[in-house]
Image (cartoon, rainbow, N blue to C red; front, top):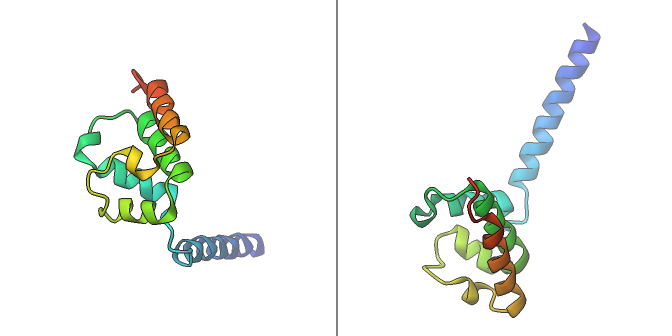
Length: 105
């Protein structure tokens, strides 16, 4: 009985830590937020998960926190990636990312 009680208490503590971590963050959109936003875009309907994941990784690497916040909040409009992160490196990275996911499902 003591073992069961200990496991139950451990699970409660774990749940609190995870919950508080999610609520007490820095206010910066995380990768999961970016994925949800990408998937909610009608233009991305039917896109392979690999492409969505790739674009989310790109946003986390090349877009600033402010750009990610605007994107997740729907305030980016239809800005192309060159306006989000306009460096040659960023443009090459998104191109390679999408080429690598072409034909996947």
